[in-house]
Length: 186
View 1 (cartoon, rainbow, N blue to C red):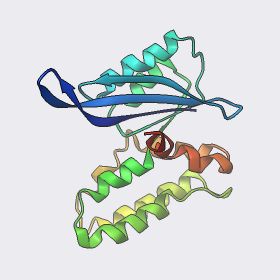
View 2: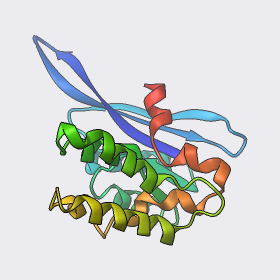
View 3: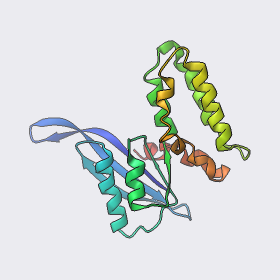
């Protein structure tokens, strides 16, 4: 499993300060050994910048990755599949939840948060993608009365990448549905 995310920091450049993105990529091997694969600073966080870093992984002779877990950066899945075409891709569910909660009224945050947790709570052996998608449809139906654009948070072209973790064994799902492990590293 390879995790990728960026941490925003303030850096000093000559006589001024500016925000920069520290791109962090680390992996976990079959024997549960973790290793930092890439650490780089760029002025921005973009799929193009991340693509450059992923290309470097391939140049370092990383031949196969079972699963790539990253934030919701647009088009990142395309960049990953360019270098690792058969790799499964999981967009971070926690990033998605935070993005939604940032766009709703304070009085609804707690309830929406609880509802989203239910949508993405697919950690037992009986969980399947069809049930997860039905939970998501029910969530959207419930909240689109109050937030007409709720469905737009779940783009049909990338929706599958928020449920990839369900395809993996139950004991791994909590570790791979989010980039929280890389956030802990930060």
